[in-house]
Amino acid sequence: FHRLNQLDLITWLYHRVVDWVGRGVLRGYDAIIALTPYEKRLLIEKLGVESEKIKVIPNGIDDRIFDVNVDMRKSGTMNDNPVILYVGRISRVKNIDLLIKAMRIVVRKRAAKLVLAGPDENLIDKLSRYAKKSNIDFHYVGQVLGKGKYKLYSTCTIFAHPTVYEAFGISLLEAQAFGKPCVVTGNGGQLYAAPPGITSLYAMPNPEDFAEKIVTLLTDEELYKRLSKNARKWASRHLWSKILPEYDRLYSTICT
Image 1 (cartoon, rainbow, N blue to C red):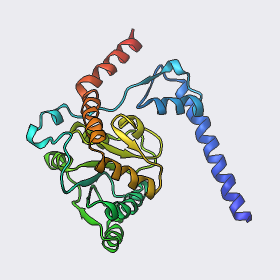
Image 2 (image 1 turned 90 degrees about the horizontal axis):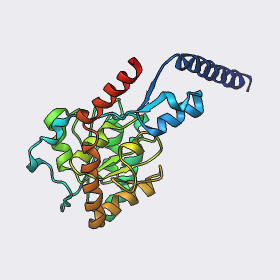
Image 3 (image 1 turned 45 degrees about the horizontal axis):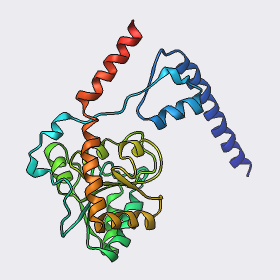
Image 4 (image 1 turned 45 degrees about the vertical axis):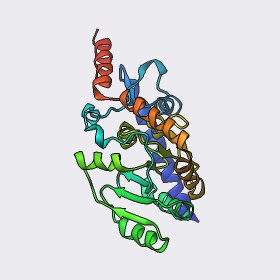
């Protein structure tokens, strides 16, 4: 008990020091860039940054993603063998367990394949065993870059993002560039990158609700097509050619 109190005290002191140092450092800047409105709110509420100093400029995606051959972009289409895709680190902090457990429920209601892509952080063997035991059609393709990654986006049906907190979520924007509706959860930048009700469905961070949202997209074709169309439009607003001028304007304002 005494040891636990010591750890609590150390943790409390650590956060107080970080908070104090952070407030002091941030006060010295003329402008601070937040990736999302959510991040801006955290800077104001947690670190006391003046709202006027904060400029929201989101991350962007490569313009060339929209130059990919149209045949590769199956925007707004459903198929007889749906693919649920996750692209990112295969890590515990990414909450992949949630997706695997949700897929166990999904496959009882609708045939679907789960594909994971990204660097493995000593988790994929455990996930593979669980998937096999749960009769999930599961495929891990390793880390995939460039056109190979674009091919994954183009052939998936739904992009699943089970991470509870993400600063932004580039993979969400990339998937939406191919017209893929997303399922998201938690809070943070992912809710900006794939706005619920517009390009994605929001699920509570539990397997049952996450599975329900996947099944909804697999069975409601009108909803799927609407989110797919919106996804392409939303992604097109976040090309680097449109984001970089915002940095230029901010720097010009600071320097004048």
